[in-house]
Image (tube, rainbow, N blue to C red; front, side, top):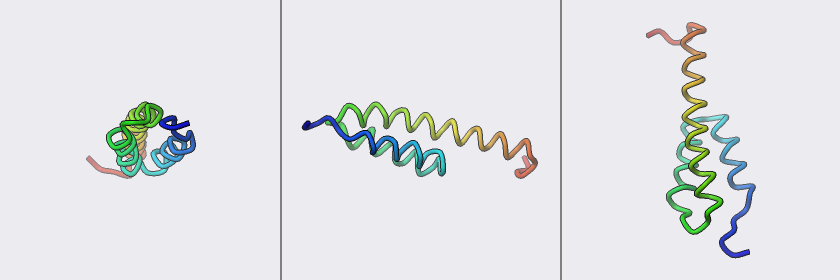
Length: 71
């Protein structure tokens, strides 16, 4: 059991990244860089970082297309 991790920690990260991409980026970075001993956290930390960047870009595209932001 030691070093395996808990799956709920990455699931919380995905939810956080969906609701707030900036906080998801921070959460994923913490998992990836601080939890080096647990491979599950490193793998999902990287995916949470990618997911939060994708959600940020998608939100930016939607905001620009709806006219909420002016460029």
